[in-house]
Length: 102
Image 1 (cartoon, one colour):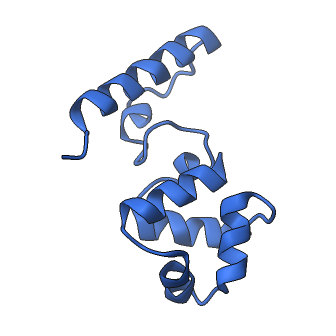
Image 2: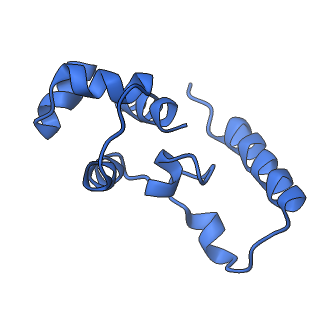
Image 3: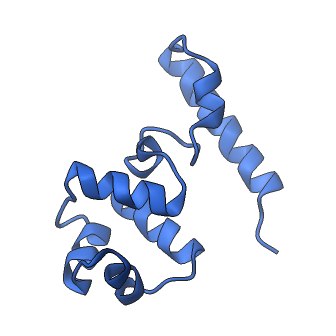
């Protein structure tokens, strides 16, 4: 999930691989490998990318469907797996409904 989320965040910001790589002092090749999943960033790089894109590390890693973690942070009690899937699905529905790019 990380490769897809990283690519999505980069594209939403309108950046090329080359531009993002330069922003962090990474090589184009390294960043490209992150986006294809053939290489994995270290924890510090994940944190740095999350801060830059203003998303949570959980979102980048695919552990949360919500970029900033806001909604999930409200509920500290874990949900049963079926309920969590239903919540994730509903959140995706709401994002599609209200956050469409014009």
